[in-house]
Structure formats: C-alpha cells, structure tokens
Image (cartoon, rainbow, N blue to C red):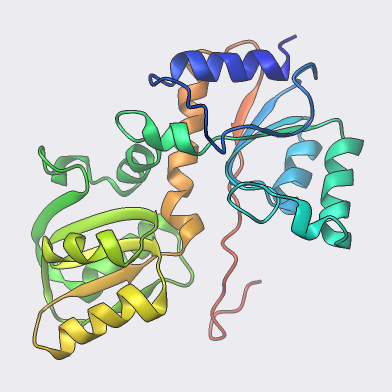
Length: 265
C-alpha cells in the first residue's frame, strides 16, 4: 500500500517543473507515513468534501485551495475557533491526510487548471496559438456567450458587466483571482475578460468606467471555485497516469452561492 509521502513524491517527479523551496504546496494535515486507501482530488477541501471523501474510504485529499481559510493555511488566527477545531479533529479521527497542490499545478506547462477549464468548455479549437489566455469565437452577443459558459459549467450565480447585445469575438480568460493588474491589459486585448473573482472597487469599477466612456467591453465573473474546478477534475485524470495502485476520484466542491429567485433545493 502506498504511503502519503510516496504519493507526494510521485507528484513531484511527474509535475514537470522543479519543486520550489518557497511554496504553499505542502502536507497540511496528516503524516507522510499514513497508508493511502484512496485519493480524493478536489478544488477546495471543505468540510463537506472531507466528509464525502471519508465516506468513500478515500483518506488522502489533494486540494487546490487551502483547508484552513488562508492561502498559506496559517492556523494561528483560528486556533481557538471551534469550527477550525472541529475540522482538524475530523481529519485526525478519520486518519486522513490533506495535501495542498496549488503553485506547481499552475506552474506546469501547460497550466493544469487552464488545461482543465479549456477542456471542460470545449474551447481548444478557439485558443490562440501565441497566447494561451486568448480565445477567438464566431461573433455572438455577450448575453448568449455568457449563457453558454453558464450552461457548460453549471453555474448558479455568474455575474456579467456590459451590454447584453454587445458583439463578442475575442475573449481573454484568467482563471481564479485577477487583480487590477494584469486585469487592465488583459481587457485591452479582447472584447470580454473572464475571471473567477476580482475586487469590486478595482477591476469591476474600471470596467464600468470603460463602458461609460464608450468602450465596448464586458466582464464575466464566474466565482473562484467554479473558475478552476475543472482544472482539478483534469488533475485527477493526470494522477491516474502514474498512480495506478490506489483508487483516485475527483470530488467536486459545491458552489457556495445561490440566487434568491432560484433557491438551492
């Protein structure tokens, strides 16, 4: 039976880039000696995901985003918090291990998250050969383009800025969090910029002002989790290419938001 440490060693050997000295990609919970009964791959190791993994007998979780509410998985701010303690104790009681796999999955070439998202959306043929973030489509309206993305990704709470009838051909996509920079130069290269999340007083305001000034621009905000989830679905497939001696399963993290006119059942 593989150990947690051996699984991590195989990841390091196959990711295709040197392992960084400074990285958030670390074993967050558990020890390298734990025997692995099965691996759950997920976008975010929420308590719900951990419970579902444990119920399936998957005692190692590989997560793209943090377990303990900060990018660096710092626990000092929540040490006395009862919810943190409950989550920590659940992991320990179930004999689980959690491995944070963020920096190197983005750092590989091609970027693992971007690869999975493009595959999920079926955008491979639309990708610019010189710019992996740029896509060209037959002209359509912003409303129709956004609806197509929403349907393919199963989003409940996509947000869109721009004229619904604005023609769309060139799209820039930057999965996950996008700051004002490089958001501004990304937007300059396309009709629409697709992001996971951004500060509303920075890039959102910039796009609003661009539209008011007469520019025909749009911004589609998917939500951070949804904007990278398919990248971890792809990660599970990638892992199966060199880990064949233990079960590996992708477990989707639930979209956290819902709309009042479409309550969650």
